[in-house]
Image (cartoon, rainbow, N blue to C red; front, side, top):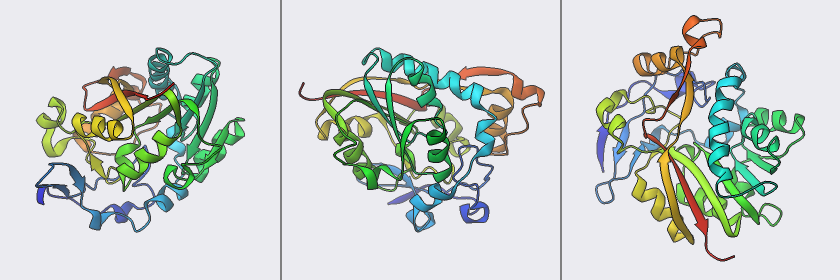
Length: 282
């Protein structure tokens, strides 16, 4: 084991918001590299004693101020999903957060179910009328009534979980034979991540694991899935937010009245990637 990047600060100093999507934490975890497989991850000694409880307690109201931008991201994700499964297919979203992807797909005729570890997020989804279970994928899956879905999707969640293999086993179990699994996660070997090095904006306390494409594909293949496609995951963002993440490394998302926050554009450098897999059988 070797140190890839030295850490700065401590997530616990900003514990109330270190695991928010709109985190303001300026801490950077110490990143370790496995000597045999070269997988990179933040030092487990810096992880919370119970990661699930951190997400259970979070309330990310600032995220709701970015609804319009986030919906553009999820619209493109729904477009991709639509190439593999057509409405009214049954879809499970693992990590539903505030329910924006559920909204997008519901309007297109899909039958949506969700899992969300944040009590705040789960309640928000339920208040919109969605069938969303509160809890982690690891605790809720596999479950007899959370299986047999035509598609399971998980956007930017894999890097957050302590045990990626356990998480993948759970979400893969929920896909019906012949169904698809679509997920996105970080790609540490991407050119953009390499150029920025320790200034890469995704080196933040909530990200526990940093993958390469080979690792993600092999995990799914071991669980009975065939690899279909990978591509850059395009996120829409604002000029103000992008500038703060690149230069300030996690400074707060400012009020939407800020001029730079009104300028939105797509970002798809490839350091966050989408993967599509199909489960064996039919």
